[in-house]
Amino acid sequence: MLVSITVPDRCEPAFLEAARRFLAAVRRPPPPALGGSRLKFFVGLHQPGDSQHFSRAFISVNRLRTRIKTPIAAQEWIMDSGAFTEVSTYGGYRTSVEEYADEINRWS
Image 1 (cartoon, rainbow, N blue to C red):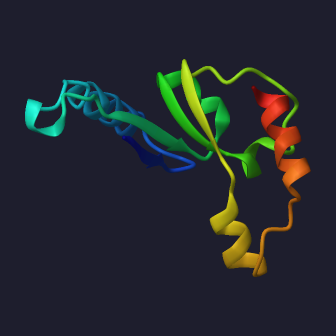
Image 2 (image 1 turned 90 degrees about the vertical axis):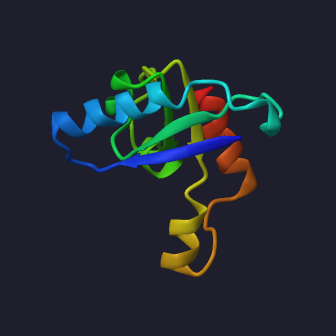
Image 3 (image 1 turned 120 degrees about the vertical axis):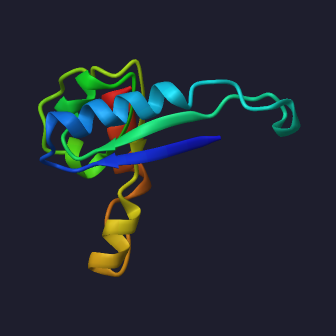
């Protein structure tokens, strides 16, 4: 199971520290009744550069499209399609499958 936590665009260092403590606290294996699998939390970031503060990050393709390719500092990260914003703002997804695949290839 993957869970994301969103960090605001501008946040206090205390918030970042609290998020890191929270992530450390939930890294314990779940009880056997839950199958013994581990949860992975990915912090949702508005600024890809903030990934340097976390081992896992969840970053929208909308934030990556205009960036010069620079590595994402998080050890593991998920690229969000940005579809919710696209559909709610424009009534549909304006990016073709091929364009989205190009972004995946660019950042992987």
